[in-house]
Amino acid sequence: MLDPQSEFFDTAFRRLQQAVTNRDWDKHGEDPSDPETIHAMQIVVNIPKLDPPPQLALVAAAAEATVRLCLDDRAGVGFEQGDGSFAAAIDAWYQHRIRKVTRRARNAAWERVQLVPGITASYDGAQARAIVPSAVHRVDPVVAKLQIGGTNVDDGNVDKRPSDCPHIYLDAGLDMSTGKLAAQAGHASMLLAANMSLDWVQEWARADFPLAVEKVDSQVFGQLLESTDVVVVRDAGFTEVAAGSATALAAPRAIL
Image (cartoon, rainbow, N blue to C red; front, side, top):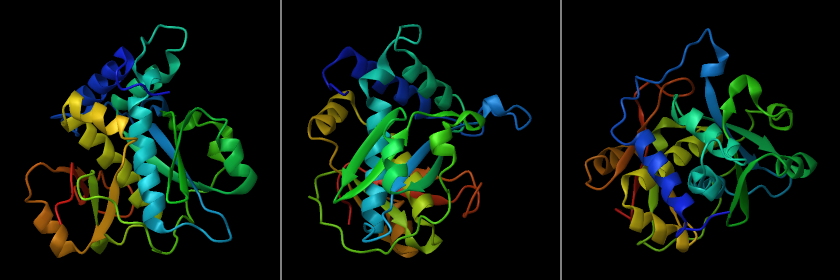
């Protein structure tokens, strides 16, 4: 449920903005000895065995699902209200490293995932569901049994999006898996929303969150890092890439 004009959308936006804008990412509140302090959003991508979707379509669906969940009206209700558990779970996640874990599902497993609280987005036939975050040892059993590996799919072809919609660029030179790319793009979509004005984000929501995702070689990516009006994702280094690596960036429009 998402109404860009509602007070709940406004509150969800402000909470996201406060959580990530000018944040010192070294201050994350995690204690490795206390699993209650390690929170993550699970992102489930639908990868049918026959005719799997293109990689960038899956990644874009994950990016859209992530920002939709963060701005959902339920993310803006009072924590103590009857339906405040959705907002409280997101807020607890914001207080920590804002981790994301990508898993794959298909067929009946994908259908079961739709019953777990979250938001599903579709992009050129690809589907991804962002699950309401939780402590990692409290992941819903339906989701916890899904594999984290095996998310890689072929590049394929994705329909080109208008140049005036938000664009996410990924560093192809880092050779990240599809699951890793999905997590990075999801973070990029969050950061972009948080760094724009409420009016801009409301307009993006009214347009149904159009976005484009592209992989570019490392040299081009390095040049894009120098652009103005971009937000940059730097990875914590837990998987696949070194800590501090710039993995993705997002801009409110195409910059290539």
